Amino acid sequence: MNYKMIANVIGRILCIEAVFLLPACLISLYYGEMGVIGPIIISVLLTAVVGVLLLLPKPGQSPYYAREGFVAVALTWLMISIFGALPFFLSGAIPNFLDCVFETISGFTTTGASILTDVEALPKGLLYWRSFTHWLGGMGVLVFVLAVHPMSKGSGQSVYLLRAESPGPEVSKLVPKTHASAKILYGMYIGLSVLQFILLALGGMPWFDNITTVFGTAGTGGFAIRGDSMGGYSAYIQVVVTIFMTLFGVNFSVYYLLVMGKIKNALHNEELWLYLFVQAAATALIAFNVRSFFPTMGQAVQQAAFQVSSIMTTTGFATTNFDLWPEFSKWIILMLMFIGASAGSTGGGMKVSRILLMAKAARRERKRTVNPREITVVRMDGKMVNDETMQGIWMYLSYYLFIALASMLVVSTNQFGVETTFSAVVSCLNNIGPGFGVCGPMGSFAEFNPLSKIVLCFDMLLGRLEIVPFLMLIAPATWNKRGLYRRPPQFDTPNF
Image (cartoon, rainbow, N blue to C red; front, side, top):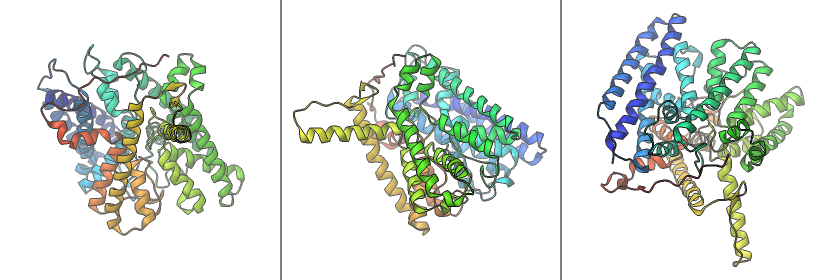
């Protein structure tokens, strides 16, 4: 195990986190929140000092492999969540440290589940930091580091970190160099964020509300700065947010193809069309079902589209209390929680590509049952999907179901009822935010007991990193002398 490399990765991230905390201090100064500035500065110093200390041991030229990549990613997300919680705790805005960690993990994992019962009482500087964790965690903190500075030159070992942090059943670099791929991803990410900011500004949205909303939309996180989430804003602003939630739920490789002029290739993406079809179909069904809840059919469609986009992209914003909608609509929303967004996007959930591949694999097995001699393969976008990828999908599904059931057993100790228990776990494991019942769109996770909050924290982390990095962290074989997964990963660079 290359401990120096792991320490170096964590140290870099903590130093970057300390720098990103500084704008929160400036915003508090702007709004005259003098009692918050001191705690934020202390948090910056503590985070920076620990980061620098971890950078002191030089990693040298020692190689690292998949196990180091997975362990580094898992430990990094734990560390940034703990240090990111310090401003909330030291300022006294959230007195309980476990609640502070819950809120910060929810931010970085872009879940949006909150323990706050009065979000508007939080100081502006802390509201900014709370929302910014969405934006940084959406594309990935390690992807950001790879975009700014490569972890290794010429060895290709940075791809282990990209694979461990990137969502989806299969990870492919946009271009041969991982560093260049990360820069392209963040370039598109920033470009879409700026475009949304401009459109919201044209709708008259105040600058602070605007930037925090962009953070929540881009990261598909959903932390709002108002008690009614997005319900109090104009229809124009809600429509803009709906569109951008959908856009950020698209695989970013599609945008790369469009930028490179490969429009035909982009439009042949099967996952994209299934993603858009599911959203459109769910919107139509829910709008028809809830038409009596709104003055006009047009408003019903607009509200249904917002909630469908918010839930499927796992953003978690809300414009209305969908917990009061008919059971038919609530069941559609629940199914969307499992499906999630596209692979390679900032959204969570099981991913549309996994659902599509599982459906294709089931069809292949049906054909084999009818005609055992027939040779059939699973294809995606015209390319054959190898057995290793399919095995990874079934492994992910197995662990997903086991973790979900075990978590529900623990959370059930709150005695909140099946609806709240089930939706709370599904919401956190899929990085969505609101569920039903106590943790509904107008509720919070404040009433859950400490053990449940700890379990839900790990569910959020497992959901964001798609289980494997944390399983590697606790697996005894990871820490033995020989280790696991030393074979270089086989990544196919797309022919863009």
